[in-house]
Image (cartoon, rainbow, N blue to C red; front, side):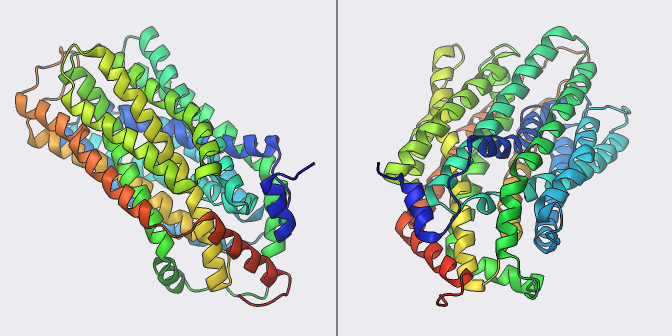
Length: 477
């Protein structure tokens, strides 16, 4: 009976056998809380701050930008510290996840409380809570993402592992939108809606973190014991940063991911305004459109993972981005009343969004292997720090640009208790441009960078063989 490719690769390199379904499920569950909280913030926080808390659009965009700037700054710090955390009983990553899980949930809940009506005090409160939440988010999510290359060294299995991760991630996003729909339909008071939604989501976000730790602990500890060298001194942070940014494949992956994520964040944050103000659809419609995108993306994760095994990661990225570009162009051309075409665009976007999740995150473990070959050290934390940093920069920049563009174009915020205002033509045009042509430009740049990315399956196999020879006392690379 012939061996499957992953088994053959394991035999050739001395790597552990394929991961069990239980381990893949436990790993995937670790991204559930991050997905729920991030998705609710993307789709509802701007609307909550302007139309429920009462902040003007400029201040609301500034709140989100300030908190995310700090969030970006703390990524390299926590990544560096997690790399230097002693292996110990719970490993370098798991101890961070367990310690930060409950503060992460509590600070998320406080995002949805309106403590006062004073603009200055509200601004200060939401900035403070944003700083706290994003600190704990990093302390949970960054060590979690750094588990990927520690769980498997197989080129294709990393893509499969990330398909489980993002199936939970997109499932959490879908679940959070369904939860929001249920809460909004059964509770009439806007402030109570968001407070209850935040409380339920916080609990659902914390519990899977402990499942992930329990289900992956054995495999991660075995890997860390295999690479741990107590006599090896960690490189200084400045040296590590220099090595990271001299890794050319990593720079390509960063560019690919930033372009993809900017398109995701700008589109997601504008959907409520585009659906409600331009297309004049019901308040529940933008949730349904978002669900269509997310459900399509979740299904396509496993389809793209299978295609990637046959055609490669870059080919999958090109196919997904091409469909997504068609969708973004379609959004700009949509007119009020074209409801069916809205959902056609949503399905096409879902095909592309799934590749934006899957492909860059399955490339980064291969980059880390190359770095170990060049530097002699495993530094997952610092590499994933910059990937997560880019995700947050994309979110912060996208939300800030949306807030500033809407204010510049004359967008009128809803006053609590008053009917929604009629928006001026300048605001409607700004919404259409920011949801169509601008994300399309980012996606096209990402495709160029993906074409230049150099680590193929064959190149990665050679890297892994050299690494195992070094670890087993063989020839130096």
